[in-house]
Length: 129
Length: 359
Image (tube, rainbow over the protein chains, first blue to last red):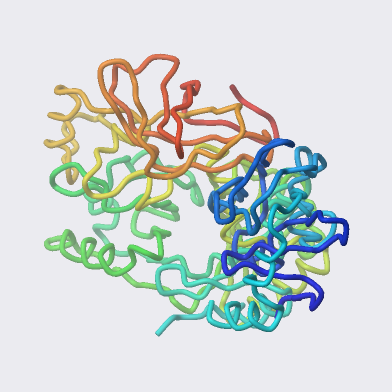
């Protein structure tokens, strides 16, 4: 059973969101998602300054098995990307909720967060997979 | 209902993620297929290949039967234990399967064929054996472990008796020898040195454990695929099948045209294909980010082709693929990827051998 931290929010498309408390949110893909994809070989990230709409495909996680789109769980501006993933995409496999983070967004409308899944809600989706 | 090999419990013990592979529950990886890949290129790894089908061909007509059944010529085999890679063709010159045949004597051969094609292979061999004094005996009581990598042979040697080591010492590539309870062959599917070891199923788990204890890393089907693709080795069902000429699948070298009076299944069709010309199987190299995937369209000057097997090459750090393209294809091509078209280099279909880049 994969780990689903209670303090995070989730999208049904397997992204996680961590509220940094300063209006910014860190986004990555879940441990469950990396397990489905297998060894990561490339991660294509958005550029800092990109304005993303909720639900927009903004990144690609390419594993040995498949290329998978990553969607923006919140609307806002990209304020940081995890440049470590350029040389070490395997961080997404080894530490999906930590060093494998993908980008940070400055949310335009924090209320969008309420529409995301809780850990329990996301667990139900994982259980169906 | 899926089948399990006798090593199923050993795979679970090693943390394998199991998948359904043509009706067999097999390990796809034991954590990281890339680490497993590197183990084989740099040290030693092992694969459970017990699902593969072993068929012994015996009888007064064993040699003439196989000279007729197979596109390569078993008549070339003179030294006991010598092996040959060959296609088994349809009458129309398509590929029923690719296989390895071992020669023991002119009335005694062993074939190792793919598991996914087991039933049709057995039926095909049976149907072509009419009029030949041969018996075809499947050997399901045998299991098989492939031990591959630059340290594979020395690690296996630590497990063998002096007598077994004497029999295997200095064995050239593509040979097999019965050493005690083990049939040990210098064959493989990775582009590295190593052995494929056939062992009675009752002794297989013990052998697997002793290999583990000797520091051989268990490797799954994921690593097996990236290794064979780097080695430019075809996968049946992907790079060729019954609709594909061996000449369009980089198997031309396995066809023994001489002696010209040897009649073999598919010869007439193949002769016509050769005269008419066929597509060719090439290697593609893409240095940019992204991974070439099976089924993607390849655009070349004056035509198009298709990627038959695409992957990320862990050894090279970029993507590679096998593709079937028109014979006129030059040094470059374009591949239709997700949302874009990317230029790739076209090379001979081989990328890595014995740990080294070969293009």
